[in-house]
Length: 191
Length: 267
Image (cartoon, rainbow over all chains, first blue to last red; front, side, top):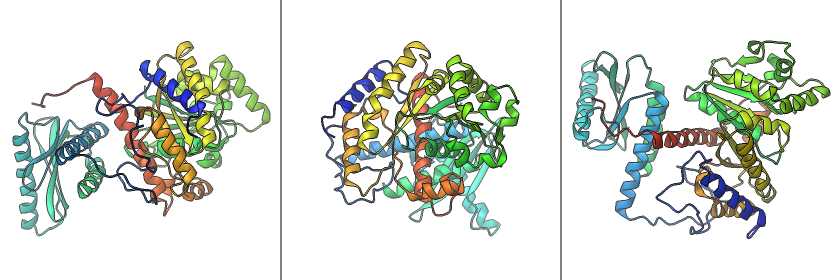
């Protein structure tokens, strides 16, 4: 396979298509466009470990870059969720009330946004206890004539996390939120 | 108008029909309205989706003006998807297909039936003939499945040349959606070699991070004529296409994001 003329030709043609802006995904500015520097690795699916007998690649990022990467990934998930569900913004808050990721914060100050999500999140717990229902995880509040803020509480390793989204009142956001929480939970469990 | 994505490759047997059906189904789970068109005279999609049980009418009858689009575009039970079969029932229909493709009628027909859908996925026949050229001339993008074998990878240059020619002559808006590695056998050393070579040689943004494993669940799904996600015990196979659908959306949004930058808050 190595040094195959067809592969070289295909690579050249791909480069030409990229230079003509004919490829949907823009080339990433953070990584080299070619992966030749990588050690040989087995096929791996995004976001899940390979069940393979080949050698796994060792992590090379520092703690700081890993943290940056996690934040970016979470932000991308929120961005994707908002686009798929037609939401206007989203905030993901951890059990300490700190924002893990924000996409188009409903309030300009991200910390205030998190505090708002936490406040609604606390209400879920308290209101649930009052009515004797332990599985209450959602709260929705109309914040103006057209939009609502919805907070969904979910648990990872016994700690509560809160996902708040802002969307038009006529949207049923639940399915999209559930799919995204699955994605976020599996990512946070691994991180 | 929605987006028309043609799933095409020079080599046959690389999973075009499987990819069209399963990627389309996964996108429809996000609430997108998806139309699946079988433009392959072999009618693989018509069989794979069990459409034949509902109707044998399709593109051929529409091209002959014998029926109206609503008689051939068959919605699924949940109305999130619809299928348009090839309608090929006689050998001469294959020639008609080719002829109408050359005249440009096939392309115009596809553009008009796609209007009401968010996404139209077209299962193209293998090769570089008139039908594929006609489809790419009216598509927004092309998704290229490549089987994890040396022959499949080596047929790529010719297909990429066709894409460039179509962009130059007929459709300068045609984009490369990405190359999808299919039939990836995680226990095969030769497959791992091919996969490594592809990852090392091709620019990272043309290759999807998701890949489709070799999984006999696809064969079982084919026997039952359903997408893998509707088959019990086919979680891995279904997840692979759900990952692809998410990646497709993310890529599309990244491209959108470049154009619009919203840093401001809502209020």
